[in-house]
Length: 119
Length: 119
Length: 119
Length: 119
Image (cartoon, rainbow over all chains, first blue to last red; front, top):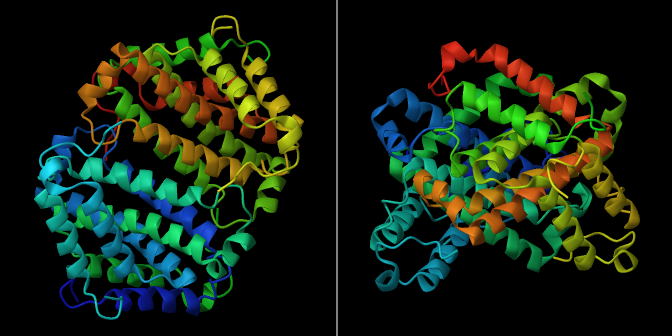
């Protein structure tokens, strides 16, 4: 399968079935899922600890690095899918709505080439 | 649009276009994206700070809470999609491969109803 | 040594010497230290993944659990001390000033026994 | 007060009194404190989002930036102190023991000037 053939709902169903077959819904309350997203996000970040941003860009030429990132990224997304299942959230509309909000917040002509932080 | 009609590639493209129109690829090196995933994951977790897990389950009956969670969850996923774009990662296969790994690691008959931690 | 005999400056000096002897100041820019604080904080949180808050309270009777928490907590604090060294921050005044701010933000008579979230 | 005059126990006591006067011990179970450490660590990291490591080093010449970092760093440490109170952990020995462990793990002559990651 691939991103060009897979519906978001297919991924949600795969996670739902995995959780259900283990009777793990009882652990997957939204608070604990949010914790796990955080934990997995930090494991992903750890793959970039102490390196320079430029070095991280070179990772794309290193299949072993990409594979490790792919696995940690999958863990983050798995829990995001589980959160969506637990709260019956439509992820496609969540993502596309947020992009629309961001388009208004960061108009392309004003922000082109400029950092999005204004701190 | 909805999860039943949206391909993972559709979401990746929407993020790619948003980033490209602002010429933000230069900020979106993998290390900085990983940081942002972490930051957004913690903002999501903050919606559950100091509450009991049981209370978090009741959030599903509170449309205002679900809306806030949906927005923070979208932020996490947006950066995950951006990471996939930056490193040319196929997310569908990343997620489904990880589920297969987890099926072997946590056989349903052994783990049914049991916590997945063994610390 | 112990908390009743150790000055905050003693801990900062111990970390400074450790970093200096390895010539690691070049890695310890504030941004990378902040990342490491995040990573270690998530490793600490992982010790509580999927368990109930009440169970976490019982950890205090489990010397092995306390030892693991102590080690992960130390990692978080080590990087906080390194951040203070890198930016010449006085931690004692940082902490005591913040408590004073919090006293005003959460007056004891108003907040007594009530959750500090108002989301 | 200052780091050269403040004992670690003084900071622990200040946090303990603050929590106790609000009857907040009931919220401060170890799991929820660990969550809050994570949340505050990410708020600290957010001050460095999208900037280059070299820029973050220049923050030390920017009193307004240092002040913001000081406040977020204080939040992380406040919860670390609260965790130590909740589990009766001696932080000075936690930190100094960890430094001793790290000295063995990263001998100065082997690691001098070399990144501590071996991933």
